[in-house]
View (cartoon, rainbow, N blue to C red):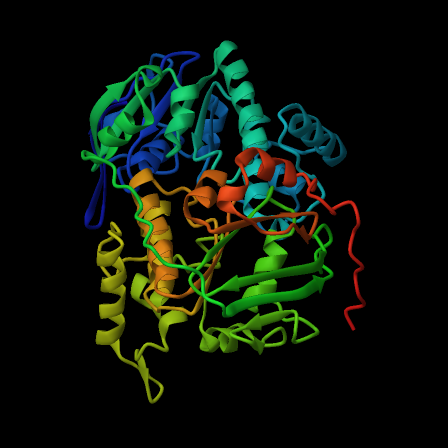
Length: 505
């Protein structure tokens, strides 16, 4: 890449970027959210043309016309925001990238073989809308690997994978590299960059500001290159959990309505005022079903299994639960957390309209814009202002906005799923600090995450969900990553005695 420049309304995404990747090289691209990484990758794989600059592919001056042209050249990409059709099965989604007619039976067998070989288990028959974020990530990676690319671009590929799956993926990437496949690797997990990558190019505000050899650096030194300053550290404020159980799951059992979903079985958990409780687990073990049951996206047949501030809420709709004091950050940013074609102000209205933004049925535009601006300013969201469309933001900046929208409403109970998925190291600290501060102010916070490091950093207690069952919650200082890792396989004391699943009626 030579002198690549790409400009969007109000934003210079790429400003004269040069980048060279050698055959068989694993090359990292580092930068804060909004630094221009994803835009540069979209230029390479034909999603968007540059305004200026040249791309040379295997010695020839060439710009892919579209993603299909890029795939034909041998360029494959796994996007941070998934490009899957939710109403189709895994096999049908993968078939869309194949030219000509497809033998579906043979394709399903190939998907199973490739996913097994690389340790990224997916079911070819499953509908995508029934998959968790982590499972969708696996589908994207498997689909790309099946194309046998000569340049593989990975944008946050491990953001929702387990440590075991990450190690297996790294083995796969090293094998591909040894066979001559070049890899462009975007990640905010700097320890992964250090362990995996040969070279790193650092972007800041759309420009190349540094290059380095990750094995000779520390995660701290690479973070300093990214943000241009010392990395802040989250502050734990001295406080203790209150006696009030603001969120209580009192024997929550629910049969999944999805063909390949997970049944929740007798889940019991109290989250008290002033504490953060984390739930760890491998993606696809009931997290999605648990979130739907707590948030009210799917109501229960009974009232008592979900209690918010002592009030039985199992049959309540999501809006009534929010009026009780529930805030919710879903794991899917676009679609559930925000609507891409709506502005940030309009997205703020969706859940924060109770903060004086609607009077006598009329929207107070000034109050709405003021709240959206407060979200942007307080959480350092890189955006063109309250009227910027949600899909114009980078993934990390959109995540910060969604978290800000919920936190600034000062909920009494906040449920957060994958709070720092795809978020850079600086922004991760902003999000984690906001959760710590909210708990210190007396809120009950429940965090569902596959990032064990994150859970151990901010949580007072940690439990594990496996096969729809929840382990006991242990104080963070009384357990370890190793023990939680074992529990993620369902091996906690007493787990061998499955609780009875009651009749939903």
